[in-house]
Image (tube, rainbow over all chains, first blue to last red; front, side, top):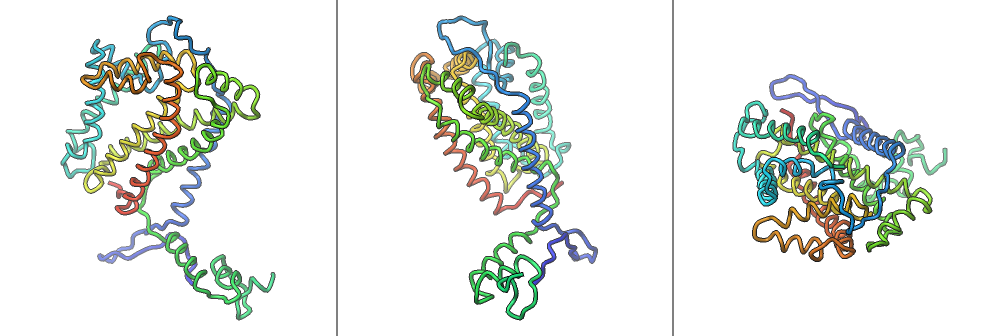
Length: 142
Length: 236
């Protein structure tokens, strides 16, 4: 039985040799290292940053507007501050989300490199810029 | 070394598979051990493309989902989705239950980690153009999984029934109310009424522990099946 589970080489049609990778050990070791690294990071963060528990919800209280909004909503908070219209904010959010989902249908280019896909590269850079701005300019977000 | 671990010819087996074939069954090369061996070996020797560490984030997100399920089940033993029991049970979990605070913290941070890992995964697929045909359907399913994960965060945030979570939910469900045509009905469906009450906690709890996980598992199965069929996208 062949027990050689190491990286092997295969000969291409042109006659040159190139590396062929097989699941074990290349991929399996990588998966195990990723899992162990993830466990270490999550456990470490959990141990050093325990969750504080806020006061119990009081619907009769009247806090400052925007206090404690969940951080993943930061881009939406910034968008609302820019367009100043809740209906337009939620509509634009849904439209952007749908456009993102439909990227493969919109980008019919056969190029793989993002530098050659201008149609998606420019909106992508704008989105990253907007995301970065929302991290700093969305006040009152926890 | 015991006699069972030797081959019929008396030679010492060299590796796990030979031991499995020769020692685990009195008849040596039995069909069932041979079938297991063939299956395991074909899995281990399956060719994989040369991929970078960036390609591991999808797997990391899946692993964190499993952590979420495990810690979430532990939290379910103590949590009561009602007003004010939701907050009281979280206090009890943090103060009285051994390691309760730790499992809650792990649940929270693994959820955040899952969102971050998925974001990196989606970004990598986007930048590398790995969504192009024939993988376009898998991109749509992956996006659905990403939005479901965001839904986990939004619904899970309200469950401790804290002041900040309450006002956060008031804000974003109020925003949903402004969506044209179906916004108000959608808001009523989410809140369980005009205002956020204990009924909203129960609804969000149902979304968080049943509806979203069920949909996530369904989409994951399809996502992984397509990845297995089409293979991982080759590097640029």
